[in-house]
Length: 158
Image 1 (cartoon, rainbow, N blue to C red):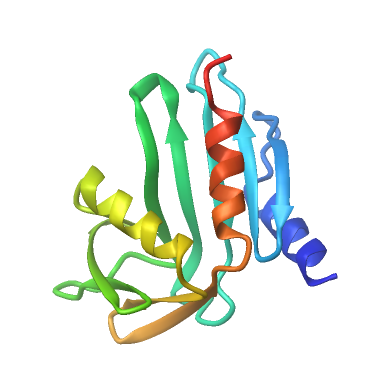
Image 2: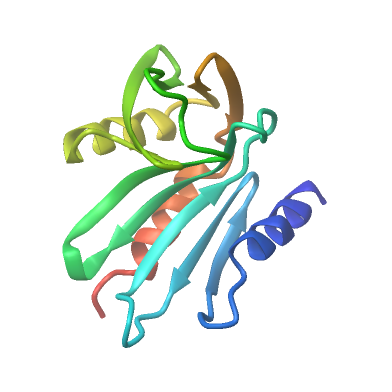
């Protein structure tokens, strides 16, 4: 039941009259979606989750695939507001800690190698936390690996 409620929230969060999203599945606390290519936007697929707490600092986390740009497994944190000046956004997954780059209301890994390390950590842990200017948001990782795989397959060349 909780997964159905989370899926509904995810759909509402990303609903747009201009873009039709294809659901690739809901897997425990994570969902996977595909945004078909349009004249103004390339094909993209992503796994997404909402924080269990701390929704006032973090809106959602995505792991995105952009086949046209050869981007696989890009980590993105959507912040509730722009990160405070001189503050950092850090992600802790298991015993690993990652300092993310911020711009406006987004936070990303510094490079593709960090993206891969974060995704590997997500696959092998149960929870993660994101600290933004001293406030922490927590996410459960149940279903994350399956949602990431579904997103990757959703954008695989046919």
